[in-house]
Image 1 (cartoon, rainbow, N blue to C red):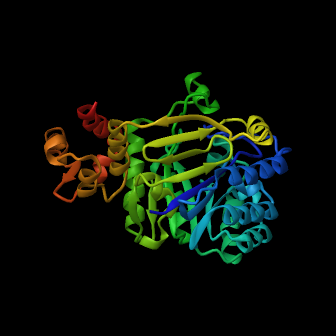
Image 2: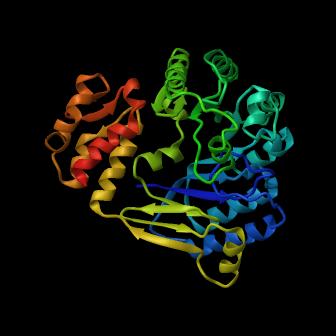
Length: 378
């Protein structure tokens, strides 16, 4: 079983108002952060794990210099057993890259880019607080191709206030025109504690209705499927099996991963732990020779079963029934069949001896359906 290595880069030029991932806009401690990160790698090195994915997420990893990226990847190869065909992903913001910087990152070992376009509409980008324009987004995608990247992911956000189906179609068409191997379409959510959630609660804008957002989900699925993309996870589309995000599949398939950097999470069943959510504390702890672990939890069988339900139903392939039964020692049909029956009868779910999966309409009710099945476990 191969592991994934996640490296959290907690720096952004400006914090997006909708984002609840940990990041800071003070870039002054980047060099200290990289020193601490390399030291954490030495602390976390383990001989029993082999890695086939490395993912630099954030934050905005592309604010790092290519030389910093190279140092991080060199240290990862030194301290961890990494396979030759490793997928190395760098999240990039169009406002922070050039063809020269992307070429240097590719030379450093990055072989997959995930570009946070979010929209090709300048008004939408302004509402989302992005630092780039639509023209910069298109330029970044062109620069990535010229830099030699073939494995490129493009992120879009939909469900913005005042957005309609025509505007969403324009974003999807603009994305598809670049023929990226991977497209992610994320529904705008209002996470507690974010500026956007506060603005919504203060009545500064009215969110779209659930019905209109749902219609945009179906619109994206139909549009991209019609252009040959596989809808392999609720928010993710790949041009081919090889274009799927190997790293993110580890999260959805309950595979082990190690997280490094401030606020990074790690998981190997049944244990999960996460690092302190502060650049300053992170650097201080490591400078003092201590691992920057904030908390550790040991999941019960019931907790792992609930997670397996949620994560399995997120994927188009659904829950692997034989694998689920082998892992938890239960009869899936006997345990969940009665609760699943209404969703099967209404066309929201399919269930046979091999898999339990949601239909496109069922994906719109993922949380509700997973919660219904989870109640049996609890």
